[in-house]
Length: 107
View 1 (tube, rainbow, N blue to C red):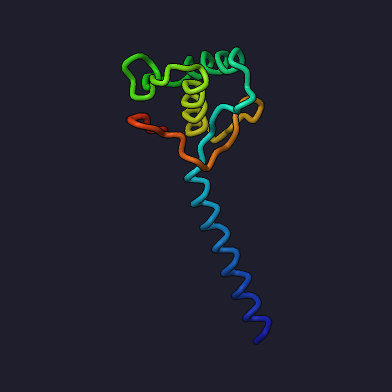
View 2 (tube, rainbow, N blue to C red):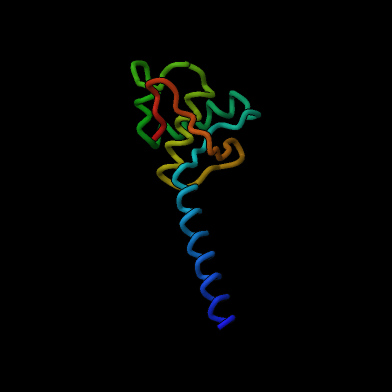
């Protein structure tokens, strides 16, 4: 009986762990590191926007303002994260805080 109880507790814990990790993963963003240099972020931005649709950070787009390299790079980095599932920690960092603001909604 003790073995069955232990097995059921372990199974319950394991299922809870799986459910919780899926929930957290769905609420994770990938944004520019605060210590990343502007030239590096511009390089990343140019590369990613050559691969992805960055219309929201173009003039007239919902995420154009504030018009800074760091904000535009953060949007493009997160867009790439949504597509590839990779957050390159050489210039980006995972965030559990939604970076969306005003009319700018991150993917």
